[in-house]
Length: 593
Image (cartoon, rainbow, N blue to C red; front, side, top):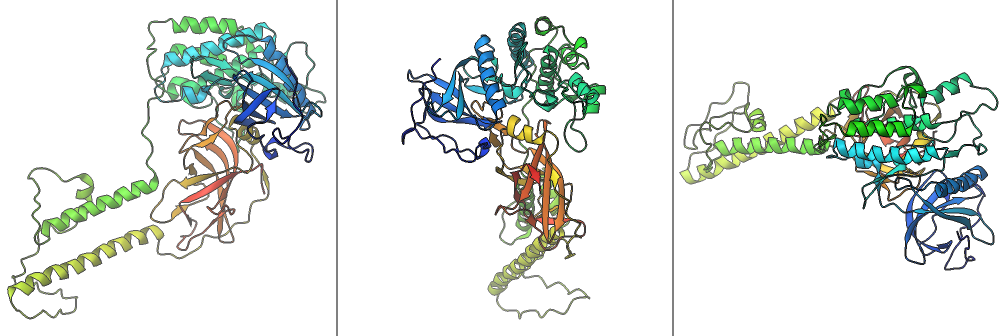
């Protein structure tokens, strides 16, 4: 294991010291070409927690992932990096990520710890498993591989303590699942590094016994929960539940964060009720893993592996059953509106073609018109107007007399009639358009009443950890969103109206950032509260729900397309509603101000 690093030079820049404990999101990434431990940086794979992970190439031409952690950020995290190295060097298995080296950089004045790891070209288990077309057999095979690696971990008296899909990668070349990131791992007998009640981990995967310990010892000085193999098995149950259903076993609490009461006392909804494609034999294994006590789960990873193999060998299960069939991509709201206008246009064209002079179009008898055409065209007259040579129709009694043009030769009469009818149709089209827009905008030109602006507010419990760790977001990062029900130019929203991501939110979802992924897919719904202040709509979004039903606590504020906080209320807002532009943005924040 080499720790040699060259001295700084123009070809090998070292970031300035700055203010000491810089957050990594404020630390610029090292440029390509930087040499660390003999490896050459080729680019950033991702970032999370307090580290940045680079794609590097060794002098022999091999590719690795290099995790770089600033020493000044946290001595505890630096110590965890060394522990991660020791655990990674201890554990050797095809389903476990390998550590292959470590050191400090730069050599003359170390300010970073680096870990060289096996580069796994692939995607996270949830992105792989929730993709349309995955079969039940494929999913169980990947979980079997995870459990196989976990059995080796537990046999070495190590607890991973952060088992989740983002820390399980599906190798692109071999197709096998690989458990990575032992930064939160603990080896029996090692001194504890955790200062608080709980060890590092991700809240939705925390076992009931951990929550129970926290309640029983709340406020007790020095109280510290010691996770064991049962905690890892519970987390496997959460992973399996998500792969089967696309959602977590328990919904978030009413105001965000984990619903601890449900985790402690309520059984999760059986997976087959969420997804009818889930076989009962696999469901039984999943629900046993989610039992409220470790004693009610499997005795260990070896027993779990044997149970899964027994289920996998059953001939009465359709292992080729697709878990998540492909769904049609939702149509954008304005596309639906455009199609409606197109249907109106087709309907008018058919009606016009039926009586417009010179039209030679005929409708085949007995063939009904398309449904949208019938709906639009039905109220309009079916019979064509009389020929131009016929006597003019008598004017309505409630209308002013119309002076008829003098009779001349037939030629001018035939030319004048289309002009009159064309003018009438243009006026009718304008009237229809005006009526449609008026119905959207509303006649009342009012501004909704203002409410007092909410006070500064902390993010929901676990939101920061989820955004920066699980989803790989950066503070200040922005993303376009759209409203769900656009009508014409503007959209009417109220305080509970959700917004939808306009495209995938591309971010590294795991702490190592291997390969990155779409952390939140297109049409993910972000919800929270909107309020009015000084003619603008402000929003605080606290939950993100993917089209597959997976929910995450988040902390996002609403921006306009010029990156100003809030959206301007447009004229024509009816009471209690706000009319705003159909496109906006959200920004990742660590607190609502």
